[in-house]
Image (cartoon, rainbow, N blue to C red; front, side):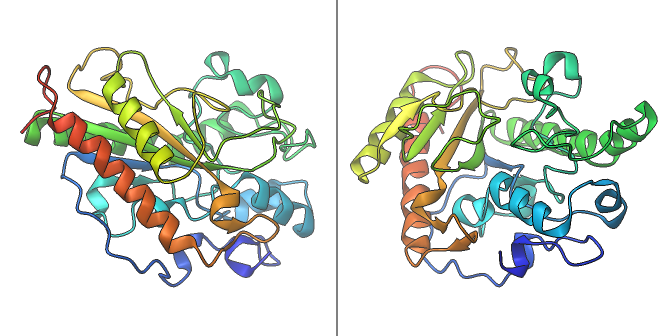
Length: 292
């Protein structure tokens, strides 16, 4: 792995955000009520947490390569104002801000991969079981602030515009990891995750159609399902639309290194144009708050 995705001796990972901006294309302008959640693109591991991991540097590099949603900020949100992008500053191996706070609610906790991972993607011990106080400290430092910022950003968009669209931005490996529930080998280019309350059918259809027109295979809620919504708004706020977009990493990175492929900029531009297609559908809706 290159240094942007690896860990230095001593345990400090370099996040993708430290790399120079190589995403050069004219991105379509999206309305201020379109927000992005980018939870898994960082590779940064604070030294204290690195010292608690049981993996050596080579093993940790492999796990970061497998588990990081490489370059998803650049794919989805490069150039979007910071106030509209919710991005975790640490690797999901430190704290996974996308997981439920309570392990009792989180299906992946049964595999040692709740909000604070104890196992790797192939079941190795990542860190010893943490005392409750240490786990809560990690949650207080990384997980809870992320969701506070997410909730505030959504509320600000609702207050300012009367409606909002939250896009949960992810990528996935072309072959299932051992920890994945869905082990079907035939993975699509694009997975669209939906929520039956917060994802208007017109939005899911528009996104799937536009991705298909771009030449990519698409599945709804496979191999991953659902859409992130702040708990304050969940099944309460009709004017909040939400969707998850997962991109097969084989489309835009070398999966053996995490480095961008030459087609990266064209893939990113296509994704932005597809999102714009979804935004236009929301603007044209007759009911609810998704029209200007």
